[in-house]
Image (tube, rainbow, N blue to C red; front, side):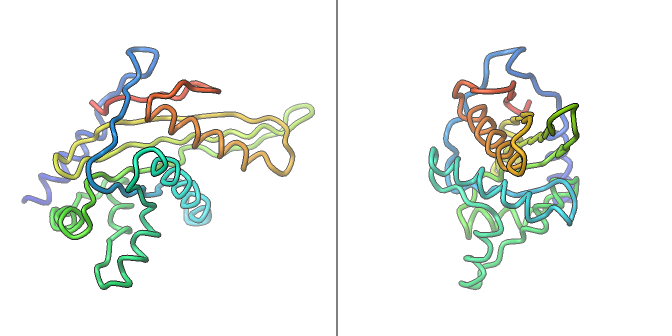
Length: 201
């Protein structure tokens, strides 16, 4: 019963509407207490390594600003060496709607001092040809789950488009998307595009 209640609370929090920057002032997210894991979700198995690379980049950028931020798979590999595994596969399934196991929550908090899980979802990766150049679009959505309250703290979106840059378009679009996503999260002015962030309510 506790497991179902925890899962229900998470899903309700996750699916509630959120305001964008244009509707109210951007939320400046304070550094979370404890450690933070960044979990990659989205796309399909064929693109798994790409999504995980984006999660590593997001973790590195947030770690530069907050400290104690880790990409989930890298963290799990280190933890496994000391006999304390992290169920990253379950966290990936939670992002898709699987109920969150209360025992895993306590394990993350008590054993690993993880207080926050940030999910990074690649909602769009698309390329098409215009009359002269290729256009690359990528859309990233991130949201943070507070493991103490089992509540979504914030959501952020970045969706840049890059034209031209043959052979480097995905790399450049990805770098812009991560940079603007982090700016939205920490409240820095956006350089390109209209990233959005809300408080998760």
